[in-house]
Length: 294
Ligand code: CAA
Image (cartoon, rainbow, N blue to C red):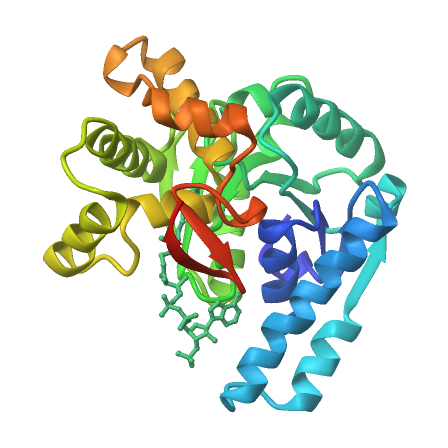
């Protein structure tokens, strides 16, 4: 499968990441099949896409017409069989290995021969997703960053058996979506989260040990290191359950206690305070913004 063979992109999962990927694909002229398990989830994803497109229209980065056309290219569905028409599928469902493996088996069954199956996973080994399929050479990581319409990076992860052709096509597709791809190998946390998560975790330990309050720690990193968000705000933005899951993957994958998740993170996840998406984490969130420390 080459870039020129791709006109329809399947996206599984209409959450924050899936909706963002569908939006970027549609804006760049691709037909999109966007699937989630329940109709209300797909509809919420479409509303988020509409909201994001309207922000581009508002600042004249896109015309109203272009936004409408992009939206019109997205077909919403709850049916996995719909991916029979896709030339590539990008999976962006929950970070649950069993759920992803099951989905890749379904995608392997319903998609045409040679169709690339890409995962937006932030830490689950691509090799484990490819192995149970009949096409591990066509399975690859395509890791986008939140908010997808704004962030330039796509981390492209080669599994153990991913072919050169699949890698070339996905690198080219990322560029066709206006992104900058970076190729990495399949080791725990890839490059991005292997580096990012220990920093976020360390900020949580600093808070836990009373080095400073949440605003002090975040201000140090924003003003001292020029980060757009402090690490505690960013952890909330990503989702504390996702951060905990990635740290556990790093700890298990490397067998190294330096990745042990901060007890404060575990406690927040146990309490259901997952950050921006639940309105409460290290900060209280309202209107999509961190308002004050929790
Ligand atoms: N769609 C369209 N436009 C959007 C948008 C969206 N989803 N989100 C923000 N914007 C626009 C706003 O409209 C605004 O536009 P103007 O400047 O023209 O007014 C602009 O972006 C800036 O937004 P805000 O003023 O609301 O806030 P900000 O200046 O703090 O920027 C941010 C927001 C871009 C998210 C910035 O804070 C940032 O870059 N934060 C760090 C994000 C990051 O590190 N993401 C990676 C997380 S890790 C990950 O995703 C992967 C993983 O595996 C865990």
